[in-house]
Amino acid sequence: MSFSDSPNARSKSITAADLETYGILNRTSTNHPSFSLGVSEDKGSRRTMEDAHSFVVDFDSIRGQGFFAIFDGHAGKHAAEWCGQHFHEYLLDALRKTPDTPIPDTLNATFHNVDASLSRMCEESDGKIHSGCTAVTAFLRIEDDEGHQSFINDAPTSSAPNSAGSENDDVISNKSGSGDSLSINGELKQGRESKSSKSNRSRIRSAFKSFGSSPGKTPSPTTPRSSSPTATRKVSSEGVTIIIPPSSSRRVLYCANAGDARGVLCRNGKAVRLTYDHKGSDRQEAKRITDAGGFVLSGRVNGVLAVTRSLGDSSMKEFVVGAPYTTETELCDEDEFLILACDGLWDVISDQQSVELVREIQDTQEASAKLLKHALSHHTTDNVTVIVIRFKQSSRNS
Image 1 (cartoon, one colour):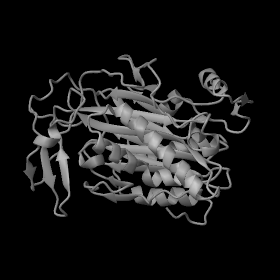
Image 2: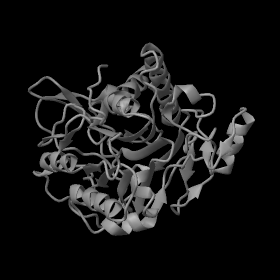
Image 3: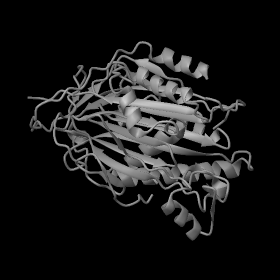
């Protein structure tokens, strides 16, 4: 991949479509039936912008799926910019090659594969590229009750437009995978580590200006899932096939992070952290590093890097690993929205404060912009990138 001479990381420009995005990176759907999203970014007080972001609506051509990510670079833009362009491709490749592998393990493998590619890129650049980045990713997946996508192979083809009969769970539950999971009451339950400036605002704001406000979520009575297992393949005039899952499906949110970029879920007004901050000040992380022969000085790995996990940073890979922390959360009607952001936001606001600040804002672009403005007005010393994803109530078949 060729990089521009600019010191600023570039994310692919955001574009908008009425509904069908055809899996195009950073193309949003203004009338999507399952979720809406907004993105805001600013370099803040830093001289350069080293953050990148990416998202794919209807990821892997399945209606209601989504991939969202933020990459916070350090020591240069290259790792973050490259991840913003390619991380989703690595995840998609892993999903298709090993469709029966548990998603937390797939995310773990993806992080390691991306990390290895960044190391090769560093070697091939003769040391010119040596940067790294923290990462927070969220994969909103449509599944059946067994955690599979059995509806894919059996879906009949239709060339007529179809409404997205994707699911919404009335059961509040979270099934633990290889990372930590949420308990039913929305608190983190300890699991095991996965093996595993202004112009920017204007550019993004113009891409989202056609967005309407997302309808608010209101509690609904318990409704049995549809017994119909039938999905539909919708073929567009461009020949792209979108699978419309059956309404009996469930939505599962898989989060993975390396470093201190963070994901926070709003569940009935309460903030639930879905990630883990990998910092030198963390006792577990510090022990891992000293056991490997390194040291932590003033909260920094070998006195240099404040985060203990990242993608890239090949010169410190013995200590600063790329293995992510993962969580698996089955969404329910009480789950309102998700905030993904780099530490430029979290340095100046708590999880709960962030949720309360934007909970009543239905327009996700406006919500992300408000969080960005809060970070800047409270004198964050870092770049800031924020993604807000608001979940919509989805229709059920009777």
